[in-house]
Length: 291
Image (cartoon, rainbow, N blue to C red; front, side, top):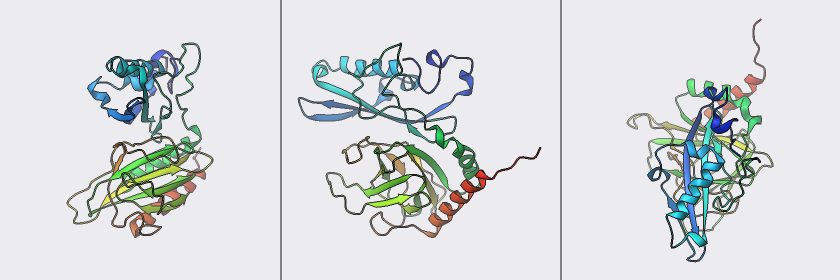
């Protein structure tokens, strides 16, 4: 019950020094079932470190602390968390099932934590490709992996000088524009491995393949745009494939010149990046070492 991605009590095993988790984003959502309300808490106003985000027992303690500080609500609330992290340079992925009520979730020191999500290890071979891509491109890159059926809501700021591209590396995703208060699914675009498109505005990415998907947000400021601006922030929003909660969480990306619903595909720069990513991926399969 104390183990997460890192084995050993709170990670204090012989190899603890080789583990590094980069937490991109944490979202704490409270649902009041009597008042039919939901709201989000700033986790950094409760504690100034990220250690608790990596361990099941501490996540349970945090949820209990939230309930204890809401005495007028604590009997009728659920606490859900959506936490994204990257272990040793892997894809950023969820640490916790965002649909589980952590306040009432099972936990035992003698059993694995069922609502902690596993590392997506079959994507580990992408790590050298990701490192090489970051070193050899003018794009600002942010890599994500997600589980089948889960959804992430992304935010793109309105800056015309910057192009943001979503390129799928493995699996398949459905991308659609997300208008607050609208349940319209028009404009959904399906992308599979090797395909890419420009994105702008508030959009939702759902993994629709039977296996986990992985994709990259690539951001580049056009010449004359006043300097380089990268992909910032973490990622947001819920784990249900059909759900579009009106939450404020999201990967903060930069907009493309072409809106999501205008056309399938992307700009010349988008195709250039997608081609380079696929080429590097296949070249890694045939990498040879000199004895």
